[in-house]
Length: 322
Ligand code: PMV
Image 1: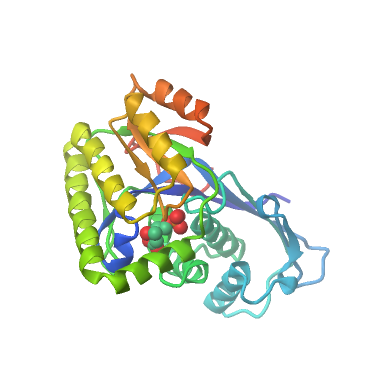
Image 2: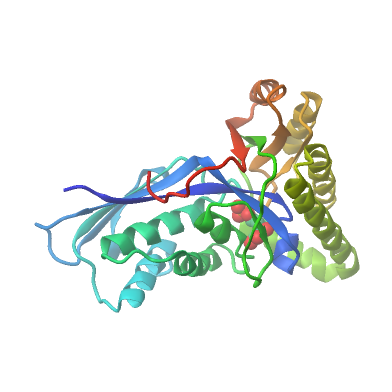
């Protein structure tokens, strides 16, 4: 029997991480080179209600009944049950596959939620609309860390560059001139919940300083949105560096991130910064056709992994299933 399947991209925050949790704007983009795919096969011979789940990237091979009720996956099932007013699912096998490195700042959790919600609702015969997908995926983000801004579930649901502000209507960012990023993994990252909690603590201890950081990041983000709309990539690059300088002062960088950023800049990138919660995980570098290969190679030589070149703003059809 053919599978019902859905996919969702990764994401990268270009500007405004952490400040966005405190109500400042941030810019995020989908990364289509990395994806989660959820496929659901009906098991007509199995006992009704039996739901098998396999997710090789996190070593999961279980059934729905065996899930801890606090597990994000268990909560996803509950949300769908409530949405459809049902008490059990038709017997099925759910396969979750992802090429997004887990816990590295590229939104792997939100990507699984979005692909899962779309696939399971389609399997139930009535695919959820974007608004419901985004709302439910946000519920799961709250399990991952208590005070998510909502940027990950939003950009991954809508698959477009967004200028995002907490609790404000989503604003899709028009990209005048498509631009290229090299994204590269610096290595293991501290958990987002820990990093977000540490920034909240620092803000409580010195609100004057941290409000100043957030305001500066907010200004950089607004200027970056203008640069993207105007196609001014030189300005965009230097704004990456300005944002990184503040993230550095907030102690969110690491020696390896700093090293990779320096290498990217010395290899011709127009700007570079960490992306996501920081303290490890991915870096992004703004490149062009002339510099991208060199930046890629030099980052690889310096020990970065999962390196990709991605184009932001290239026209493409939004298609949840490929
Ligand atoms: O590292 P990630 O993918 O979990 O991104 C976190 C981004 C933060 O701004 C630090 C938190 C948030 O909820 O926006």
